[in-house]
Image (cartoon, rainbow, N blue to C red; front, side):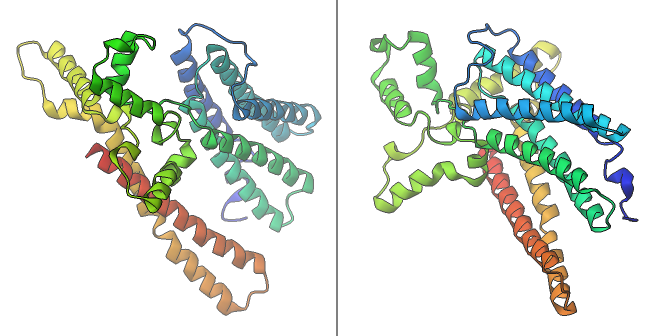
Length: 351
C-alpha cells in the first residue's frame, strides 16, 4: 500500500481520461473512415453472433455506468459511472455506425477494447491488493469485477471475430472486379485457374482468420492436418494475400516513388530507400515492437521462478501466492512465445 498508494490505484481517475482520449481518437478515426460510405442497413442489423454480443455488452456497460452514477454516494463513484457510460456509449455509437454502413468490424475499436482491458486489469489488480489490507469494501470489489468481466468479454469477442474477408490473389481478383462475376469468358485460362483456387479457399486462411487465430497461427491447422495425412500439392496451399503479391507490392512501391517525383520535380532524383520505407516501414516497425515485447518479457520467467523457489523454501502457508507465481510463469512464457512468433512472421514477410 505504501509502494503504490491510492493515486496509482486510479481511484482518483488519473488514467480514466487517457482511456476516453484513446476512444475519441480511435473511434473518431473509424467514423471518419466510413462516413462517406452509403448506408445500406439499419443500426440493429447484425450479421453474426459476435456483432449481437458486442452490442449487448455495450448496452450492459452503459446501464452499469448509469446505475453507478445514479446510486453513487461519492465523487469517485460518480466519475467512475461517467467514465463507464462514456466509453461504452462511444463503443455503441461506433458499432451502430459500422452496422448501418455494412462494413466489417474495424481494427480501431478492437484496439480500444484491448486498451480498456489493460486499464480495467490494472484497476482490479490494485483493488485486490488493497483488499488484502482491508481497505476496500466488498461492494467496491464487486463493482470492479463486473466492469472487468464486461471489458474482457467484449475484447474477446473482437479477438475471436473473423473478418470474413476473401483470401485473394491480386491479379485474378483485380481482373474479376473489372469483368464482373457473370462474364468469366473474358478471363484467360491462367486467371481462371487462379480464380478457382481463390474460391476454394474463400473464408479460410490468414486473410479470414481472427486476431486470436493470427496470433496463435490456428489458421494453418487444417494445412498441417492435411500434410500429416498425405503429401501436399500446390493446390492445397493458401493463395497469397493481396498485399503480399508482386503485383500489389509493385503498385504500392510505384505510388510512393511517384509521390517523391511529384514533390521533387526534375531537380533531384527520388530515393528508393524512402519509397521502400513508405511501403514497408510501418510493418517493419510493428515487427520491432513485437521483438521489444519479447525482450522485455524474457526476463520475467527467471524472476517469477526465483520468487517461486523462495516461496517454497520459506514454508509460506498461503498457497494462493504460490499459485499466482506459477500462473505468472505460464503467462510470461505465453506472451514471450506469441511475441517471438509474431516478430518472425512479420519480419520474414517484409523480408
